[in-house]
Length: 250
Image 1 (cartoon, helix red, strand yellow):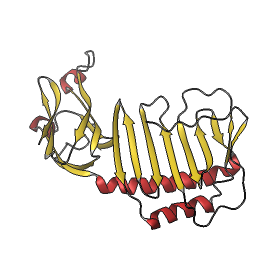
Image 2 (tube, rainbow, N blue to C red):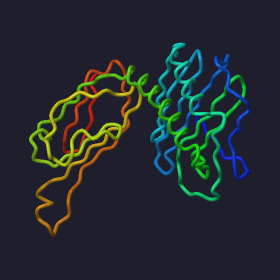
Image 3 (spheres, one colour):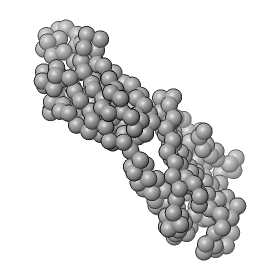
Image 4 (cartoon, one colour):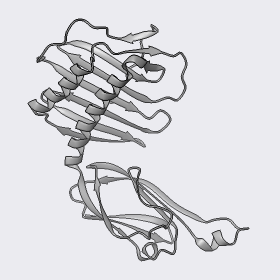
């Protein structure tokens, strides 16, 4: 499920001020969607008084983490919404815009909806851009903290041929690069994984083919989505006759 907010047919959209926001609303729902455009990666965040979740869609896989917000957490987020005039922020349509992702936020306060759309062909009005960024940053910071609390630390081991430093080697997890181009030979390490699907990318090439200049470079690479659960004890990456192989130890 993705939270997709489309621009209204008018040149401007969003909700104008309907008076002051309540001090302590009975109902508060916050939805944020971040779309990667051409990049097959998107996020969704949902927060209300009695439940919350963070979702990631990547390469056809979905990972979802749930938690229950505290009263203070909800109060802090609502204060950010009030301070940044969430009820006044507007966006405008710029006509045809191709392959643009972006961030859209939908806030429901006592059944009054405020749509803040900065994706696709909708752009936040320049006057309100700083306010929108402050709201988006606060939601992301809060959700990221809750996600980090649920991550699973897993050891990562490398085969002897990779650890030898002979082969230039790139290695990243969820776009976080841990080793790059043999500047440092990989060593066994640990990483905090999402409970669920994680994207692991590795690449190496054989230096003999690269040093012959006239020949082709022989690459080996592997890009996989691995599902990490609390039962996973370790992950091993090794170079074999079949290429770069990932092995999960349960």
